[in-house]
Length: 115
Image (tube, rainbow, N blue to C red; front, side, top):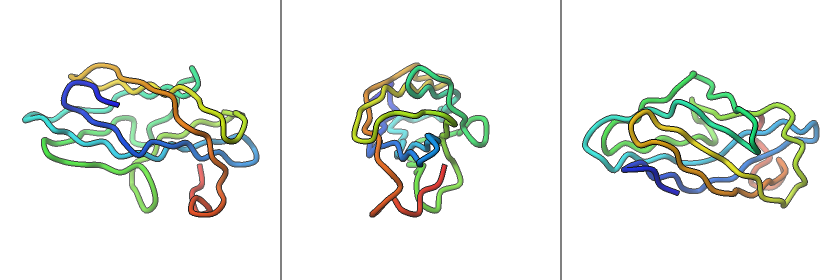
């Protein structure tokens, strides 16, 4: 998915047994000026960006995944595993983008992902 010069890929949501979720993704700024992730919505519910917002410099890619320092979390997603839920991301300059992403359990390669 793309908003302006911001490209978002490898997007998945990991949900635990209690229905709590964290979004895995990479955001790349292909532009020449910094932009900031300022809001996220998952399944039409406001999600928490752990640092409140995330600035992404030109040419920089930021991961929201294993060993990351930034996370997008939602308590109480409660979506069926293997279903798709809508995600929306808002950037300060590039605007809003969205798509549907798959919900997976914290097993296998996702075993260490905790919301």
